[in-house]
Length: 336
Figure 1 (cartoon, rainbow, N blue to C red):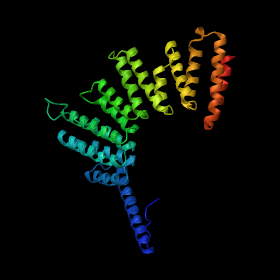
Figure 2: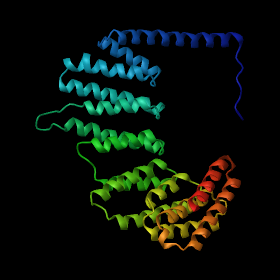
Figure 3: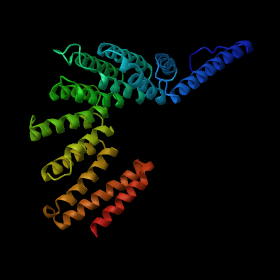
Figure 4: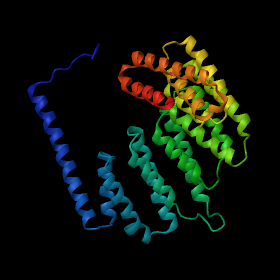
């Protein structure tokens, strides 16, 4: 590494370091064998639970140990605990996994265990307030996942977990609040594919529930995504979201309008791979969905334009050359 002073270790220091590492490995292997032996014998004791904690501190990706830990709670601890004690165990495990996520934010098994903990939260603290513990835990989870997304706004596991929390929380947040959240994330970074994906889920929910005018809001989305296209025409996530907005291309006017807009951008960015790919995609949608509105001479012109774009793509994107050749052959087949 540049500008970093190299440290030379003596033979004795290297040997001592090697012995320490071997000792740690031996300890890990012995601990693993002990835990798996207890698992095989279906031991659900608190001692076994403590051993899983030690092992997961060393290796939080050991999904078998997470499964064993949940079985210990379900079969050996929860049946002999009060609702308050169960809630405390679950709260402790949520805290434990929070500490793990700081170092391992993309380990699926940690997120999976958190989700399980939420599902197991009992009624309480009183009969008059049966959702009290759940509300406290779910609100804390939203805070935790927002902190995780501040650290890495594109952590897809955190986004998936956020969707689960929002869907299952006892006091649900309005969808408009989540829409505003995705707006902030997208405006901070147009390349945030997970935020675009979350936005599509929220909008679909609002449209299906009749809480948002699809026609008006789609126009606003086209404006948002157009700004993103012009900011970074090479960002794949923006173009994928744009295709979701266009959908099956049944709206002739929208497909035509978007083709014109993309062509304008291509005129400014003549080597934009995504502009070319999208023009081919939308022009083929026109041919497929609206043949009655296109004269035969115009159809041939559109096919010719697509073939020309695909030839250009073979040059600027040689790694996917065969894909563009296959698309060209498909266009020829469509014409016959």
